Image (tube, rainbow over all chains, first blue to last red; front, side, top):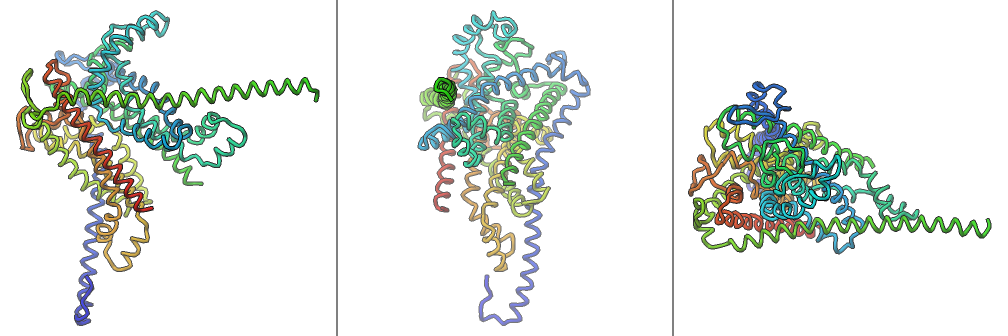
Length: 329
Length: 294
């Protein structure tokens, strides 16, 4: 508030001095408060890592490094190994990426180079809506709608046509259950497509028009411009987007839990039910009845955390490299 | 050059050109097919949710408790639980998130510490939610000795936090520095400049961030499974286990009972409609704000 004109001058000077002091104190307190809040962000991640290492210590101490390579999962006899969930996590994420990466690239290409302007806004908004749907909805849709279709049509077809092939045949022969790693991978792919395609679309838009127009002026087709100009220019951003999607696919819980089958058995076939780290924790944690059981579940959670941390950190570094290259210009 | 070699090389060039055109046309067509492929799943999933959900919507959904196996009932306790826990999570996450975002934008914009916190925040933003649930389990549930709605809200607030931190940071950085300088040159203390000038200018962006965070947690299931657990009865005690719509959906959808499955679809419908409304709302706020700035 401004000092009123009727106030005597000395009084207002004293008042201003006092106020400057209280303002400085308030500023200091404010600064401390926001710095403490920022510190909480750091603590949240560090605490997550540490609490899981602590929670999993019993499992790591009991089973040693063999925990990671053992396929045992026997709550009755207190024998636990992480190989089956780790394998399931990696395989479903790999299937998801095999499908999602080319499709996302296609969508990003369509939205930046091919589609007429009036179509770009609505289509990208719709794809982003797909990203907003909660993962449990994907899971329920997968279980009630997609699994029956897989079991009735897709799996028998794969059995008949790909099953007899050498080498890859064993991947595609199995009972027509519908649930299994292939189904989980496909549902995961549908989930991560919007994430990857929106990152790709954004980085494609950073390519200078001058570069593209130069290539067009030399007689390149749209595809040649995208493949030889846009993609090399945005390489690190594209890889960053793919890694971001991979991080999601590895850690996704609900969509996978519904369609994976929750079976602790190592199966060669993609059509057999399996398990993933996140699905195992979601299914069994609340019912885990012994300390060692719970500790083993936290330990595989720690493995998941480390893997996703590495993947996400790589994604961030790649994306940052692209934006730095942008800023340097 | 003779005429024959001229026509020969032109034929080669023609063939090459046609081949390039063909590859181009095919790949562009494939990109259109990819877009259709993406939209196809969206329409299919939304249609399934709508079809099953509308059939299961009844007034009793909002008045009756979750039933025992095989019986009819509603989702009243789960809806209340979700509402309460989401509200608490948004409250905790927004207060800490806005403060942390302020620190990043106003006190650590180009500093190494700020970069580290931004990096950690981005990791937290995409970290698997089930892992955050395990953290709160060890931190809160283990110490209290039992599951509680408070632990569930804390787990959800860990998902809200990075979203709010990031949008606050970005939105405050967009505020022109002339505004800060003008206010500071009038002798206004910095905290007042931040609260009364910067926040006001960045408000639409921050609100959008909070709405997006709310959309994200309203369907979140994994971190609630072993923090808030579930509760068959009406409960308003935050130190006790509490039902939530996603967890009830998970339990009921996996069950063999028709009535439970139909309740799960009703829950799916309510959650999806809520999330889509939030996403449309946040988009309109952003667009309107952009228009008024231009």
